[in-house]
Image (tube, rainbow, N blue to C red):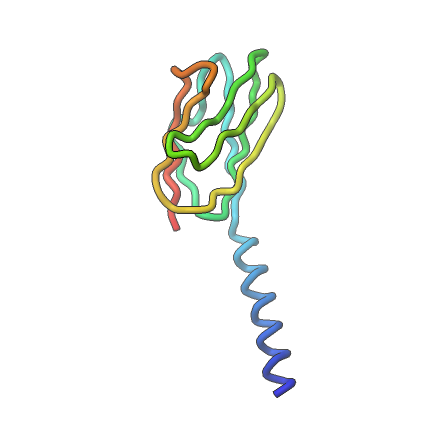
Length: 105
């Protein structure tokens, strides 16, 4: 019985390590009042990292409410994707800045 518990604990750690090893960090920049890339593909568990290269305040605000990240000038912020689907987002301060993240399971 103890051997089975030990095996289960090792298996759980191995699976957790494998899941986090597959997670990626996807970089998106905001510069000259544009989001690049405008369309991004990612997976659940990946981290989106936005970098504001402008001197203006920006946000990454999901239209479905999944996230609302504030990006001060010349700063970086991130968010871990928690569910699959298409997420359209925009900058609250500059609504013409828009982009899409396609999140696979």
